[in-house]
Length: 459
Image (cartoon, rainbow, N blue to C red):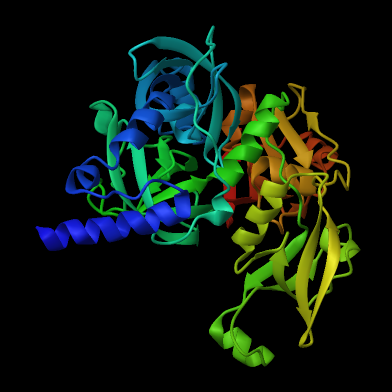
C-alpha cells in the first residue's frame, strides 16, 4: 500500500507541475485529490435528451417498378428516435457544446443540469464533419461554465477526467491520462483530428467534457474504438482549440461553420517516401498538387514542397494541416514553414474561404415535361465541395436536393452526375436539357460515396 501511495503521489506531482495544482502531502490528500476538480467541473457538464422524427423510407425507394408501387400505397409512417448524450456549458447565458451525432438532427432537445434544473434547447450551429454542435438553452442565465485550455499545450501522460452520462445512468466521472495526440482518421466519417485518452468513455459520454487537473476543458469526448460496444480504454476527444473556433462562429451568428480553404493535394511523408526524397527522417506533408487560387500557391509554395509547420505548429498529416488552419480561422495571416529541395523556408499564408469559381449556377428543375422535375443541382466548385463534403477532386454537377417525382430516378443529394444516356454533362443547365428528351429508358453515370455507379430506370 505504501508503494501504491508513493506511485499515486508521483503521478499527481507530474500533473501538478503542468497544471499548477497543489501537490498532496498525505494519504488522505491523495485519496481525495480529484474531489475539488470534480466539484468545480461537473456543474458545467449536462445531460442531453434528444428526439428526432424521421420518416421511414421504403427499401424499394428508387426502384423503377416497386418504388412507384410503394409510393402509391402512401408515405412511410414517421418514427421517433431518442438519443442520450452529454454537453458542456461554455458561457453563463447557456451556450452548450455537444456532438453533432447527439443533437444535429434533433427536433426536440431537453437539457438537464447537474442540479436537476431542465431547459429546452435548440441548435444554433452544427457541423456533421466536425461532429460538433452548439445549443442555446432557452431562458438560461448565470450558469456555471468551463474555461477552455489551449489544447496545443496538452502533453501525453497528463492526468485527465472524462465527465458525461454513459448509458443514460446519470453523470459519471472517470479518470485516466492523455494517451496520444494528433490522432486522425478515427471519427465516424473517417476524418478528423483528436486527442486520445484511456479515461473510460462509453455510449452516452458523447459530447461530454475531458478536463485537466485544473478543471479546464481540453476536449469534447466524441468516439471510442471498440469491438464490444463498451470502453476498451481508447477514446477520442475533439481538441478545445477547435471547439473555441466553433464557439466563436456560433456567437457571431454564423448559420454554417466556415473552414479556411487549402486548395492543396497533399500526402503524409512516410518512411519510404522520405527515403526516396533523400530526407533524414519522415516529417511534414508533401504537396502533390495546387489549385491556382490556393492560398499556398499565392504564398509561393510549389508542387514537390514539403509543408512542415502552419502557425508555428508541426503538421504531419493532411488532417493535421487542415486542423491547424481551421483553428486559426478565415481572414488570419500566419506563417507556413516548408522544405524545398533540402532547404527550409517560410512564407506568409493568408487564410481564405473556399472560392465560388466557377459559379455554381444553382437551379431547380420545375417542369412536368422533364424527367428530372424537382431536382436541385449545382455546378461543383471549391465552395460547393466544402459545403457538401465532396472529394477535393470532384468535378461536374452535384445533386443538392430531390423533390417530387425526381426521387423516382434513384438520385440522392450528394450524387455527382457525370453522364446521361451516354453523353457527358458539365452544368446544371445541361442536365435540364437532357431531361427534356422524354424517352422511356434512362441510363445515368454518377459518383456516389467515391464509387462510380450506373443508374437505370424506365418511365
